[in-house]
Length: 284
Length: 280
Image (tube, rainbow over all chains, first blue to last red; front, side, top):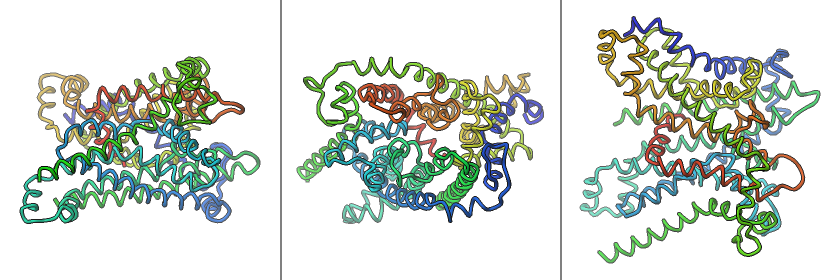
């Protein structure tokens, strides 16, 4: 195969490689370079070394706020999404009737796009807050908890499906043995069920982590108009596109430097995930 | 024991039904408001569309005509179908080449594709927009080209994983029988890749149909705008009074195709979305 296929590179690989170069390779390299420059547009950049990175942590006040908000949001989402999703999975693996119907319903919100989802919840949250004569922009904590509710609504069904698959992999005999030995339901849950689905817990934790950390569309649609509720991705977007005037080149440089830091944070998370899931697999 | 079990089951069903109501409520509220008069949507979002509040399908007519909704819908449909087809065919070909021809170049390409999966969009947001405009890719076809590029990381990764599990002997037999690599791929390899192709197609279709930022930056809010861009523009753009009724109708029309699609191919979607979970 190797010999005859080799000269077919232009047909098999080139089309994808061209698209990949235009949408990723070149923009990525240019992005790293531009984070060390100030630029009004890409073709007029001046090298400024680490100025942009220094500015993020000194002059710019939004980045650290956004980072802290993102960390808190991610933390709360991981806990609430996974606890609820796991509980639902436990209820739906007890051999009850109509579990297929419940799975269908709980999973459905996951397919609705972030922008539409954000506007649905914007109507609901502002409707509820309307009873008290305020709206979501009134207090940053409203925006924060609004995002948490939205994230739960979207992600619970997805994680539930993964937990159900994990729970169904536990052989029935193990539970039977536990109950013959007189283990209480709570003891069985914490000593047998949860340890047995640890691989699913790891996957779901990192999926919720990555999705919350990189959240953009929902944030834009729900909190686009309120200050102090921008997560990292939205903060980077605003740094690029919400500024005009003389200091535009500085803002662009700062935005690109923020994007590099954002990328590094995501890369670290991905690396830890790789280590965590890799280790779990070798244990089995 | 039996009676206790029964009480327990009733309790579980009650909890599940309550949760079903909670999960469906947001969709129900949007549906309800889409047939209510403008004035009642922002003032009484939770009241039923009864009596004078009920305006039948006026909002849907307005939603269709005012915002040129149909155009956005068609743009999204065309871009999604072409991009998904392009991604599935082109990346499976590339993945086969990368797995079967082992050299330094293909190894590097594999790592580059895999690496691109962990890079968040914001990293290339500004530069890819600039490059797309420089290369005149700010069109429907240009958008498809960019989606093939953005989708290539995950799908090359998924196809490669599957191809590695297929023994190369089958393909080699075809070559001995006089098949050239192109025919070998489409007649023998591609049919075997079907399960992965379905997964890739579903994951990418959901992503592209719902994607907002890339089409907004590349195609803007003009004639070529996609559905999520049209929704975002209608709900946040402009000043003065917004036609809330038309907006609710737009939200419903944006959700309906997804739910219909979901109900028809639920099995594949759930399997596909979960398999796509590798995209960290």
